[in-house]
Image (tube, rainbow, N blue to C red; front, side, top):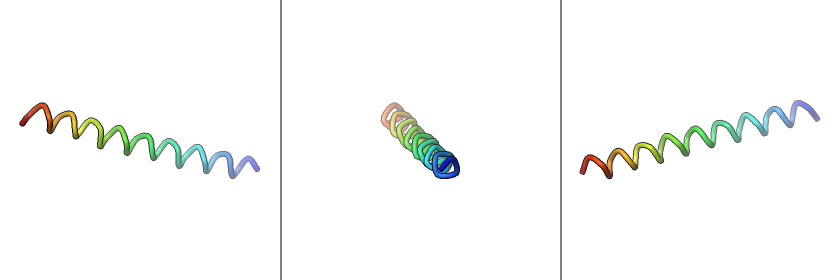
Length: 33
């Protein structure tokens, strides 16, 4: 059960990081154009 919790947390963290990367890239692109 703990293994599943760790996996879920990792997926959540990776998803959050990817979202932040796309978000910041969009902000930078909008700011530069």
